[in-house]
Image (cartoon, rainbow, N blue to C red; front, top):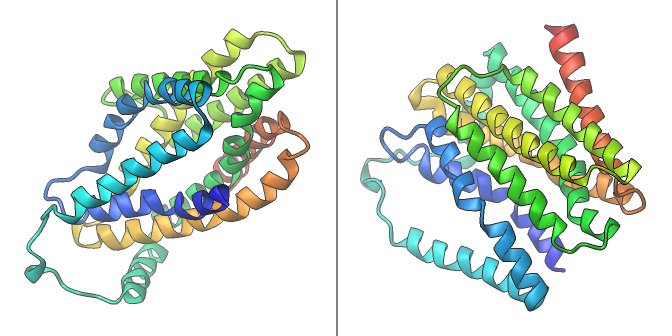
Length: 278
């Protein structure tokens, strides 16, 4: 039951985060704000692994729930804007206006399709990696994976202002890294190399997200930003429950193949969309 409620609630969290901050804070920049989060996540995987090994999974879930609970209390008492000056609109109308704007912009329409497909494919990756520790009888291995991914994300935030790769190039390297990890797991060797590859995944995934939000934000006038981001997060997260169900059934019997599926899927998106349709 806990996994079901987590699966239902998790896709809505990034939507709520962007919608809460982006339209209401003057001068808010999605690209500049995103790199700050990975630095807060570096120690949490190790801490969670320690709690799990020293106590039990229920303690980890309880601590996670408490952080959301207290955050909700703080946000409820936080005054961001003068609500009297906010134009109240129906949620459906809000999304409809965003859809009209996106459908008339080829770049935004393409980005919406890409992020929806990527989120769907990454469900296979996200579902499979927590079980890698079981393959090697190491309950801490998942914590190591998250730790190295966070290091990669921090590295990405450090070089974000320098010359970066294009969105499609990040997709390509993400796919290659996942396939290489699958090969290493298949050979049951190079576990240290795997952690380095997981760091590369964190690096390219972070820069992919930064590049995506940068492309969206620079293409949308400020008066449409809230509507467009609402639509993008709604459409992209709609594919996550479907991906969790589909890949959850497949990975239930083939854990390591989750990496292979994600890697090939990302390479197919890269090739079909950026090499054929572009």
